[in-house]
Length: 428
Image (cartoon, rainbow, N blue to C red; front, side, top):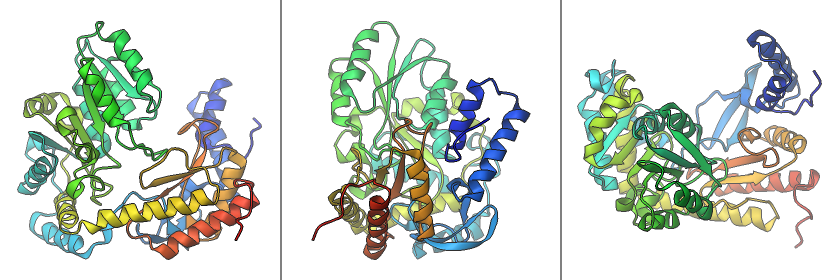
């Protein structure tokens, strides 16, 4: 089986399956050999890990190399740097001493503590919905809610760039579903118009900001469709909760649309530097999810330390609004630098900045050289994105300094010229 060494593992797997290689033993042998060749050439960025935990910098090592390289880290979603905030860390340590290390069972089986209730109450007050349900992870929030909320005569329509947790939840529901073109309100409306009388309910599922492209949803325009069509709208605020809206209340709040959105979900692993997820909604939907969302009913609660980290992070955001302001200032600064040099950032707006490099060969070599220069992020390739939409994401954090941004931009500029990603040298 011949293939280019730069071909991503998942793409290679699809190629093998298309050629009839589906047996787990044979498939694994081919993939493992391909993986080892990529590791040998330094092209397998997924095999790297930090020796020091995540921050704006970290010591990054490989699965097959004992030593590590000091790098500027650009692939972590801790937008406000609160995972290293001393107040947050101190409160977590106190909570672990008082409440122990784990919850031991699910919320429905007695795993809830006063800390979990405080998190739910804090989120309910912050977002302004009647009720909030706390899940152990952001992934299982979407998986549980979207498999449980739609009835058997309902249709689900979701943005085709939606996260895997949304797609898996929709499929697990067993309902009819379809996608609409990314951020294309016209395509969504055509589907609503066609199917509005054919189903008991329609659920429209979107993200407020998309993790692969960094662009914001046309939320006002989608909500406006509710004046003409009857549907529920479910918004995943994974990449906007904590960094948009007053006190980080989210993008729906930022646009004044909280009352118009039926279900607001988000992860707590990003801006709030912990783990977990939640969905905010009318209180009447909570018992339905208690009993139909398996990822709530049968999954152990957040640890007390994780729940405390969420509370402490939300308090830091409330007491230090300049954190959000500074993040967006740095976002605009880095974007101006990159666009002035001719890099393609697509339609991105959020603190996720994709640098598009459509040629996979160039992308893999580009990323390898970035790592050699002490700049680490991960290549995003097919099937995570379309075959000719490969990119490297740079996820900004308040913890990134101007010097680190400048160092990264300068390295991108030099490599951009070398690989023909940008056309011309910058003139004075």
